[in-house]
Length: 584
Image 1 (cartoon, helix red, strand yellow):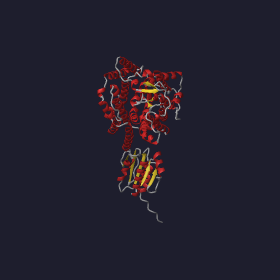
Image 2 (cartoon, one colour):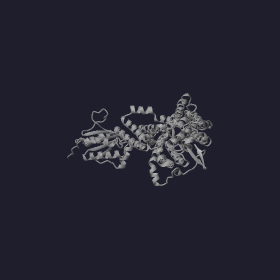
Image 3 (cartoon, helix red, strand yellow):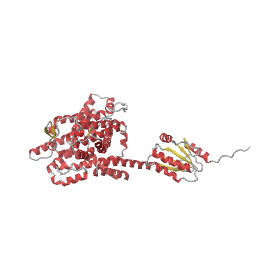
């Protein structure tokens, strides 16, 4: 049953960091009934998160327990400190494309260290109050990212879905596809049948009933089918056959029955020297993890607000996410962010506060401690089917095609560029190029909205009579970089007979340094031509910029007027001949 939470009281606006989400939930009243709802929602989300966390860790290229440790540690830390009441944090599909190349190059130690660096970046973003800036990233950029990630994840699941045994595992997508194609002869019909059966259950069960999460039925059925095949001499790859660990000198198949324990991240796998060179090499990946994590987490929080009728604090959410990612690597966890699907599931099943997310983490912990031997029977093909469905949902194919059809050409170009860079190269390149494209798109939009218009006598918008040899120019839109120079170019064609120029800046809400330089250049040209410039309609922000830059009145050259009427009177006095002197 869908649960829509509407606050019963007007909670105070809590801007102090952290604990914003938890405190705002308690400010609206929290009782035993709310706790019961949170526990039930946490149980359901924990059941959904258990196989997903393992599948995502495997997709990244690490053992499944690292995904479980991420769900446990991040699921306890982030909701406690965060700014959203409903955010469920853990490993997500969006990170697979970034993390997999890091594992391939630097091993698990490099992956965990990059995650900790990303956490430090996110903490800085939260403390600097940059949470609201994420919303200014254009929709084509984020859609291109997610569609590209969905494509990569979906194609790479063919390995386990078909039971392929490639001889190599390259870093880049195109080379991986080629390796899978070369291994096509190793495909297994039994693995394919198991995977397709699981996928069919995952798709059909929600149409029959949404009360029971589909993975709770589909994956145990797949595990029983794999066990039956094994008893009849048909072996399929499972978590137990693929992954092993050594605990107290004893080999353990599958995941160890241990909670997350403190570790030094850089010592796992091939040891990495903890020095400046290592941090410098990992920094681009860490920055990409931080940016994508911020986008994904805040987008998830916005979706949660829309479903539940609440508001989140984006700065507190970034701070909490950063702390979570700083802590996770020291317990064997990979990078974490807000998970949209798990967050929505929690709301649908009655989540009331961050306590539900913390309960979900405890459910995953209990499963690790109690069900580890049974989890080892989960077939890899079934987990691949689960990730295939996740990849399809996150790609939003229908929305992607719709955008290509109806969006302006510039937006389509950005969309396709981000998509192709994500698929062909990697997320580090795609995130970097996407942010640059976002800046260029912003500059183009500013250039389109900012303009300078000549208002002549007879214009219906002109409410004052202009004196002779006087022209009126109106500047429309903000004078930002990319737009200021184009707008100020209008003054280059000033006629020689003009003596007064009235510059109306009433429609300029803001001006940056580029706009200031362009305006100063225009004033200099007018001064050299002997034209009096009357600036009118200044708004507070541009007025502050001009005052700070030392642009002041100069008799006969530059003068500020409060209104257009006052400017017309000053112009009339300037162009009118002086009255003859009286003689006695």
